[in-house]
Length: 297
Length: 139
Image 1 (cartoon, helix red, strand yellow):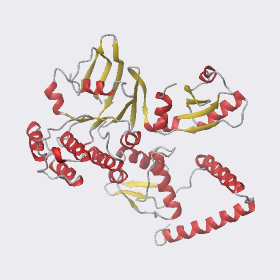
Image 2 (cartoon, chains in turn yellow, orange):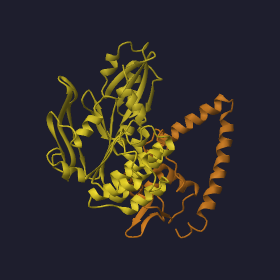
Image 3 (tube, chains in turn purple, brown):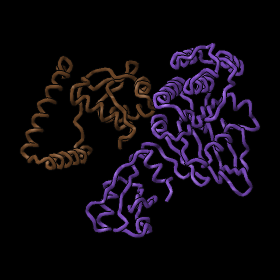
Image 4 (cartoon, chains in turn blue, green):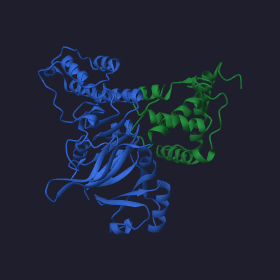
C-alpha cells in the first residue's frame, strides 16, 4: 500500500544554520494512527505545518496522498482534517455559521457525526463561539476537522489544557471517527495516556531527527529500565557497553538505564556481570520511557 | 464488558484485555458460548484504538479462547483451552513470591498462607459455578 503521508529527509530552519528539523524520514500507511512525540521545541509543530503545506521544507520533500502539499494545496487540504493547539475560531460566529461555512467548502459532510458531537458536548447551534467553554470550543474544532470525513486527520496538541474528563470525551469522539472512517491519523500530544489509547505506533523527535519509531506494544514489551547505583558502577560508560543499552541517565545517585530487552534477561545479565543479586529491572509505561529517553542527563 | 483499562499498568493494553477476558472466564463472569462485543464496539466502550482490541481478539482466537463466526460475531469458545504453563509460569512464580513476602512481613507462616489460599479457592469455585450454570453443560 502506498503511503498516505511521507516525510523524506525533511530539514527546516527558522534562523539560518539553526535547524529545527535536520533530517526527518518516516511515513504513515493507510489506516495507521501515529503518535508524534518530542520535547517542547523538538519540531513537532514545524513538521505538522510542513505536512499541511503551511511551510516549505528547505531540504527533502513531503508528500500527502502522493502529492505536494504546497503545489497541490487545495486538493491536499480537502482530504486533510486539522486541529491545532492554538487554533482560534472566530469568536463572533455561531456554531451553526461555522458549520455552514465548512460544509460549503467540502463536497462530503457526515451529518450524523455532526449531530453526535453537538449532543455529546451539549453544544447549541446558535451559541456564539465566545460563549463556549474551552472543552466545547475544542469539540467544535474537532467537529469542523472530521465531519468532511478526511482521509488524513492531523491533530497537534488538540486537547492541551483540557481537564481529564473533557480529554476523555475528545478521545472518545476521535475513536468513534476512527471506527467509522478508518482514516489515517497523525497525533501530536504530551499526554502519553491519550497517545497510548489512540495510537498503535509512536515516532519520537529529538535533535531534529527521528529518535525512535516503534509500535506502542513493542515499546511496552521490549524495553525496560534497570536501576544501578552509582556506588556500584561509577561510570555510565560501563553500562553503555552492555548489549541493548539505550541510555543511562544519572538521577540522585542512581543510573536509570534503559535497555532494549526483557527485564528478566537484562536483570540476569547485569547481576552476573556486576556481581550483584538485587538489581531492579522493570518494564516502563510510555510516559516513563519518554522521561528516561528525553529527560536531561 | 467488565474490563478496566489502566494505561499506567506495566502491561500493554492488548494484554490487559486478553488477561481480563481470560480472568472473566476463570471466575465465571464470562460464559462459554457467550457473544462478545465486536472489536469496534469494545474499542468505543474502552476508549482505545480499534486495532488494539482487534489484536487482543486475534491472540485470544489463536489460543482458542474465542472464535469468530462469519457474519454472526465473536463468541467465547464452547471448549476452552488450557493456558500454556510456560506462558504463565513466570507470573505465577512472581505472584507466589510477592504473596509470601507480604505474609512474612505481617508475621504469618507458610501454613497460614496455605489456609488463605484454600479459602480463596473456595470463593473462586463458587463464583465459577454460579457463572457457568446453564452455560457449560453441553461440553
